[in-house]
Each structure stands twice: as structure tokens, then as C-alpha cells.
Length: 338
Image (cartoon, rainbow, N blue to C red):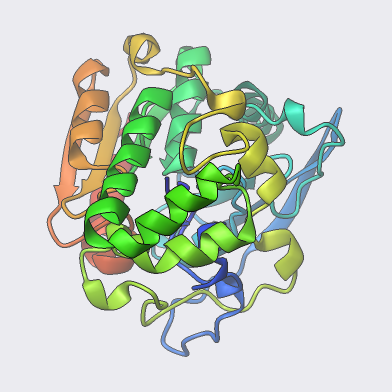
């Protein structure tokens, strides 16, 4: 129901209001007290064109994967600034997102295609193994890459994520129930629209549902429907950094808030995760109704070397609601790796 978009990268439904922001939340005024980091932008060539990433910090390499599907890494640069004292942080824009090339054929936007991007980035960076942090949809990508290339995994951090189409559909059902029971008039309008053959791939649907569902992302209800106190600076390329709807619909189908379709249909990672022998940290927020602690526990239970941590004062974005505790937890895991 709700996209697993990176925080403050606008989701489809939030066009009226990633995973916590308005349509142009990437253009929100910067808070002068917000952390500042000098990011260097780079690209590496692929058969489909440039693959973009940003780099900052010092220390062991940590690759961050944004949510979506379809989100850029612009806001993730801001929220990860506190990690650059501990890591050389690399934030990836998969093909079709952010500063990277777009594909002519949307059917080629697949999880497997995103895995190829991440593995190509590893080779480009000259790293034998990677520590990868995937948030939301990015966590699904991190799982898929780790299962496909287990010998290349130094460590995995899976933040507020799901493990495949089944869990994603369960998310949709939770969101439908929220609308049905808490907003009956909106539910009636939604059903009337469906009876007319209208699907959830349109702007009007975003406007209808946004006020009903934004609370599902947050522990602090004051964050629902508006930006948190400290947000990322304005994007110099807003058209590139907002959620790419073409990617979103290609991967989730033409009725993405009702039923998982598109190229993610049938994707299930749990059976493949035991291949990953490297240490893993699985994170959730107690109030995250999008990717709940139960999903985190399912993931951790099948990873051979996993620890699971739930942030008690967070929803879908612990780096926003509990930034100090989040940074300490991530840095501690990074220091524990061989």
C-alpha cells in the first residue's frame, strides 16, 4: 500500500502531502543546525549508461541503498551524515533513479537488474567484499544482492524492510484495513473508484489516501503529514531526485496500492537468505506499521549470523526519530566486522 520509499524522497501518494515527505520534500528549506557533509558525486559506466553514486567520509566502506522502488539517494545523504565520521559512505542511485541513466523499456526495471548495479559498483570500487545498508526497498535489494553474491558480503544492515511480495502484500492489507476502519468515507470512495475501473496508479489516488496513511510511518504523530524538524537541503536537481513513478509502477504494477504486481510479483527472499554467512544487523521501529518488527524477526531468523534490534521510539525512519541511537547502533555493527 505504501511505497518503501526513502524518507523525504516523495512517494506517489504523498503528492498531496519514502517514505515521509511531500511531493517536493526534497526542496524543503535546509535547517541551519542540520549536519553538513561534503559529498563527491561520481559515475561508472554500464551497458545502459551512467550509474551514479555519491561518496563522503573516512574509514571502512559502507554502501547505502535508498527506498522506493524508484527513490534517489539525495535525502539519504543528509540522514547518513552522522555516519561519515565512522565510514566512507557511498550512496547509490540505481539505474532509473536519481542521477543515473533511465531505461527506454520499463519492463527492465527489476530487482535482478538492481542487483547487477550493486555488484557492478562493488567491482568499480575495487572492493573484494562490501558492507551494505539497505533501507526499506533498499533492504530488499541488499538481501537479493547478498543471496546472489554471498562471498562478496562483508556485512548486511537491513533497515525497516520486507522480504518479498508476500510481506509486501501483507503491508497493503494492513493499509487497506487502516482506511476501511478509520476512514470509512475514504474507503467508500476508493471502492466506488474501483467499481468504475480506476486503479491506484494515478495522482487522484495519492491525494485521496495520503491523509489516511501517513501516520503509519511514524512513532511521533506530530511528524505525520508534515516534514520532521530537520530535513535535507534543497535538491539542485529536483526532477531527478523525486521518486521515479515509471520505476515504481514497473516494479509494483498498475494497481500498486491494492495488489503487488509488476516485476516484484513472486519475489521471495526468505528461502535464499541462509546462503548469507556474513554478519547481519536487522533493524525495525516499534511503531513501523509499514515494515513491522515481525518482518524484521522473520528475516533475522533465517540469516545464520543475524542480530535484530527494534528502536522503541521510532516508526519507519529511526534515523529521523532516534538519530543518535541509530548512528551508534550502525557504527557499532560496522566496528564489529572483521
